[in-house]
Amino acid sequence: MELSFIIEKFLLVFIIFIISLGVAAYATYFERKVAAWFQDRIGPDRAGPFGLLQPIADGVKMFMKEDFIPKHADKWLFILGPGITMFVALIPSVVIPWGPPLELFGKTIALQVTDFDYGILFIFGVISVGVYGIMIGGWASNNKYSLFGAVRASSQMISYELAMGISAITIIMMTGSLSLNDIIAKQHGMNWNIFYQPVCFLVFFTCALAETNRAPFDLPECESELIGGYHTEYSSMKLGLYMFSEYVAMFISSALIAILFFGGFNFPGMDYFSGNTLAILGILVFFTKIFFFIFLFFWIRWTLPRFRFDQLMHLGWKALIPISIINMLITGFAIALYQGWF
Amino acid sequence: MDILIWILGGLTIGTALMVVLSKHPIRSVLFLVATFFLISCHYILLNAQFLAIVNIIVYAGAIMVLFLFVLMLLNLSQDKIQKTAYMLKISSVVIGGLFLIILIAALKDSIDFKPIEGVRTDIGYVKVLGETLFSKYLVPFEISSILFISAMVGALMLAKKEKEIIE
Image 1: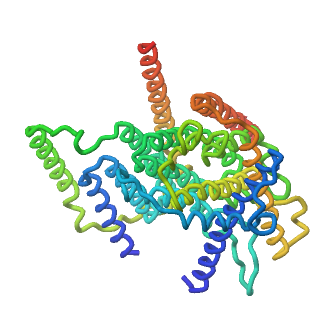
Image 2 (image 1 turned 90 degrees about the vertical axis):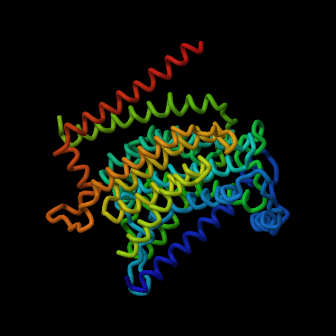
Image 3 (image 1 turned 135 degrees about the vertical axis):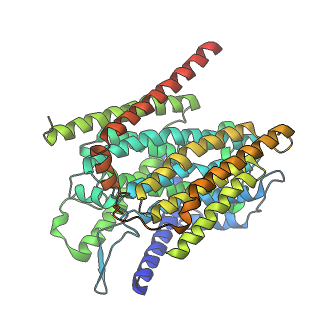
């Protein structure tokens, strides 16, 4: 391996890391602004112009607070929990293609850290492991509310993974490849999957809400029943990591939804551009789509009330999984007809 | 590459030993999860990416979560575990020793192993694996899927029966 290759990838990882954290930090600010707008309030406006320094103030506050570990907690697992959650939230960004290749210093730089030909499987592998951070943290706190939160989180995430996986299989069947690059290439221009698979998109989006523990599926941290759910005992930056990883996960799942259903960095009329212009426009388009989905997450949170836990389980097992299986079968028949198998 | 295999192998054996040696059941489960991850790393080194990811999704992501789930609800602690009987300890040692002999017997010839010739090294890729499964091994593949469905239906029937008894 050349040194320049290693430096290129290292820089790319660093930039993606900074962007993920920056987007997550400002997502907290925009969430509060959006909530204020929905409820006819002003929202944070004290720190800096329009309250723009609010995330930094919050970060400093989180770091300065007393870091407390309960006496009967399992110390190492208590520390490990938030770390795993943050790690799992950040790691899928290595396979996401952020834009068309850039040309810099006479070299073509792919805006993707690694191009696995099984990229989407990798993302599902990481998502399926995501529950450990919450479970370990909730159990290690040695508190019944934390344990309830952890148990709820694990059953919820396992249930919604199934419908999410099946709806992703539908998209994989249409593309004929597990690579995220191929899925994007298939949706060139305005040929987006959402026009072929609206039902699949609805199922996937609902599952994404449940997987990121966002309202109306935020039962693991439901404050009206469980105090704070799995992070009841957490304080200082450990709590900060849990809250922050939720926003990072929201950013990554918005990117995934944009790739699977809304063509990633494809936009109508992209054939008129080439080279770096195309790359920069592609990145801008991709981020616009991501921000739209993050806004959709906020919109749903401040509109819908929270589900009850049995309603959540019924929705997952008795509605979303059958719908996604039927949708997958119909897609299979349609593909077979289209390819002339009958 | 050689060093990587040695490090991975050592770590795998270490975490696998910790599964048995750690005193707390929850820690054992977590070490088992770590072992599954390291085994997936071995799969990737052997060019079997699909198997590696499926191993993580199915074992680390679903089955071990259920293990952890049950253990957390039981909340076993050191003083709650009953002392095992003396005879039980002896018999488990004997059974474990017999299993060790079987393993040694199976692996004794593998000390001077030679690389196998004429095998496709790309069989682990998703595309090649899919083509093989859906052409050469189509019938066994379909039969095993029926087996899975029957297991699922069976689990549903058991759950339903229990509910009727409770009501």
